Image (tube, rainbow, N blue to C red; front, side):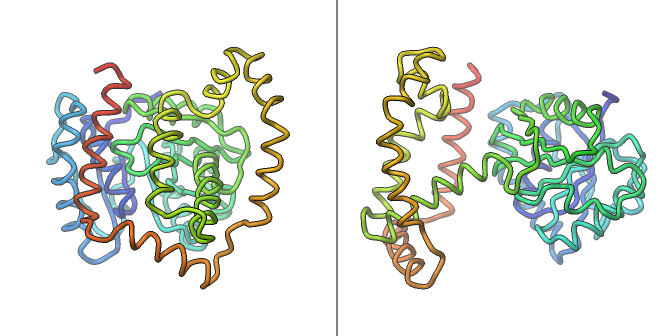
Length: 314
């Protein structure tokens, strides 16, 4: 992998801004663009707010908030200086198609172009890329990227293995935990898992089976802590006594009962209509009553830093 010293950021929403902080914390130079009014001011404020957490995790030698430059609405005059692109534009197919064509035409042919797309596979928006579409892939983080270790690397069928290897090595150099999907699927892996669990959570709350507050407690006091350490498949193997045989034993033992649960879930699948949303929103509103969401987010991030440091043995 050629040395990556300067990263280009396209789009400074929540994800792009968080990526910027991560890259800066790792001693990289970052060139940033965003066409939205006030983007630079919002980015400055956000970076100042997350820098203390990044310091707690540990800054690379030379890391500084002064190592980024906001270059305006586009990177068009700066593409030649960039060694890696992280694109964070909205999930709009036409926008991404035209944007990726611009980036592909203007960057050096060896520069990997990673999209933070959270659901659209890259094969959907590379149709106008003619320089080297084989270096384009998905580099989808879990929010917020400056804290959460996961990055899903999703190549399209024509992505080169060299580009996949470069992306994996680069994200690992940032202390991320990249995973590779071997096939393109809408939503990738983590968001599909999240969607499946949230769909059932929405159903249980909207049907009045459980309150929003108690539903969240179910996750934070059972599945959440356990899965944070071993994930669902390893947890099942342990629950069955360990090893492949234990995993298979648990599924054979619980499978029939699970099929009945799943049938009931399908029968009562959450439907995004006014009635269901009204009931769900009302219960979430009760859970949020009297709470300061910004303070909750700050506390969440503080605890995330501590949990991740414990997992890393720091």
